[in-house]
Image (cartoon, rainbow, N blue to C red; front, side, top):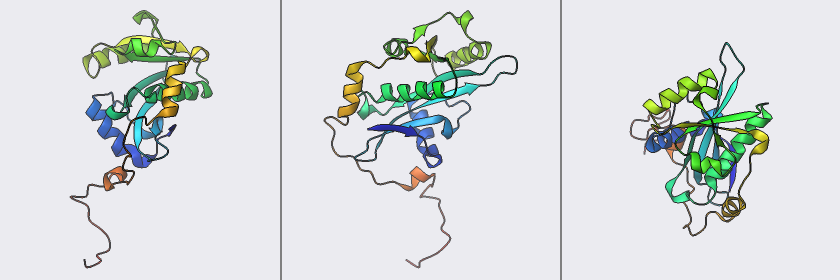
Length: 194
């Protein structure tokens, strides 16, 4: 199992799963996502995103958002490693603090995220919090973490190393949908006569 940057051809897969999980797809760009992959089967297990806000009147702000783990991969440390990769990425990009606006505060607390006052949020995220509460996450609360304070619980690191534990071999064959092709309406340049 490993986590890598999303590829452009995974855009349809990402959007399908974001919609199915009811996650936030505001300002979607596949290049902002990472994807967790099972190295043996090639199966995608989870994903997440860092969204950089560039307000005109203040410094850039980094938000962790749209973290999703496919149902049959939950409980195996996939989400934890997606979050770890995104926080590392934020640090590499020069951010000292990462914010999250979510109803999953207890989950993020195990990594060192702390709830903060709404008045301590950068202005751009105060507006985002209102939008998330009105849309994809009515229970959203503001959280933040200093990048250097992130910690991975040992049990999640071990679970990730063992994944896919207790799972049957997955089908790694890519489908036309993985490339954004609708097989019901696709036309092909060359007719082979078959």
